[in-house]
Image (cartoon, rainbow, N blue to C red):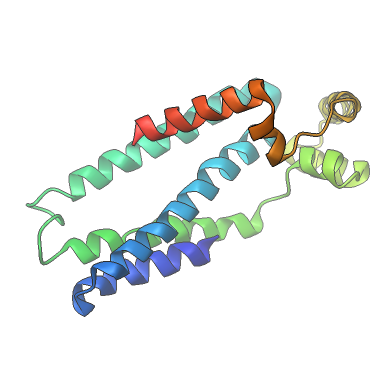
Length: 186
């Protein structure tokens, strides 16, 4: 995903020097792609890895860090700082900072929930949980049991396709509400 960040940043920065608004439009497209990916994938990962008693806190801290990032960006975008005709390429170039932080993701473990349910590998999920839970066997076994129950329950649910989201009225309504909420936030 960081390739989208890199493409977006380069196009944003060079757009001033090539005098091309099309470059900014393409850059914004790639920005939307990586923001969409990270807005969906990262919170899901964060909700699956911490212990049950910390999941809410981790989710709130993730959202809080996003809001802090927006505040910092707005402050840096003031005319007196980086929001002027000469320095705005530096401001948009700062998107590389979070991308550099994402390098740390190469050193993280896979989600134990994903490994257990999707890859069907209980031993690997147990190994990951032992690492995440500081070798607390009781806690790990409780989480493995919880994952096994979730896997059993999800196997009885019908599979929903993208086409079902449009064809089935209750799903279509939920999709429309979700789209309207996202659009109204913009």
